[in-house]
Length: 139
Length: 333
Image (cartoon, rainbow over all chains, first blue to last red; front, top):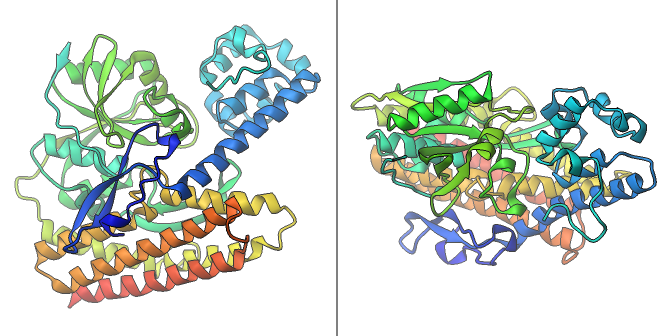
């Protein structure tokens, strides 16, 4: 890439940060140039973020219908899946999935609850509830 | 309170940037491309059985840790590594190093670092940074992916250092203990390049190196026939993210490597190598074209055509093959 071709698309996700790219200057020498973002990257980044959002919304709907515990919803808002959550808890995936059942979740020990709360960066109270509608838990 | 002077420098990739910063502080000034190139960590690997978020792992460089290990073994640098069973021990050891005026590198999870922009926070557990001081429980950090030095509080840093799971850092902390006075750069460059050529052209596995790129091209061509059409879009999006997202220097480290080759051409006084460096710039540009097509197709600005993406990957593969062959000639000639 040449220095003049460095994209400056002011990507929102970079939140004002810029990142250096290694590019050729007019004399054919390598140098670095800061980029404020590239639209192509923004597209695939948002694709990944939207997938988590979609999964969180679905999980919330299930939790409201009594088919899932709030744990599943919070997991997706923290950009995890059952594999990552199980690994960060030191549990098997099937155990975590079992904790998605409202009846099982209700009976979790306070020790398990506080560990879940820690690995998700939440308080125990927040973990046990769904946030009020219209509040994005990720903000 | 302890504020030693640390020269912060933003780099394209966190691990090569952290290594370069620690070595520079200890008196060995190497550019980021030189660090990355000498490590021999450039690669392409497609590991369909290793899933990340339901997606097969695709890597444009060797696994985390191999940049620093590759570099230090080639230059005979003695790097001290410390891991900890208990988070409190790990934080106490960090404090001791800082109180003794020693900046150290850390392996951390991106997600729990408070200064990362919201959209950039994912559960990637092998992010590298330098801590160079502290002010009570505020840690002064030179994070090579940021323009300015940043800070983190005790709890966040502890969380980031002791997450469990894939690539769990286990509190990893490292610093150079002993650096040879006159490292043999010329010898190390030739060896590193030869190692890279072998890995990319002669790995006896169809999913590594240039053959790996062709393998993925075949996989992408099949995506159109998949029953699950959502998967195809996620697959190509995932691939572009691995290639371009923060920490590759763009186009899957190829531009960073091209810069290394150019610098090496000057050190070795090898004009053939300088020519090959430009070829690697072209390779990076073809990878960027692939990313651009994929993004346009995902956005609906171009018809979704997996065949076109596969063809573009084959262009990349052919160029890479030629690039490594020329590289091989340039260093043996």
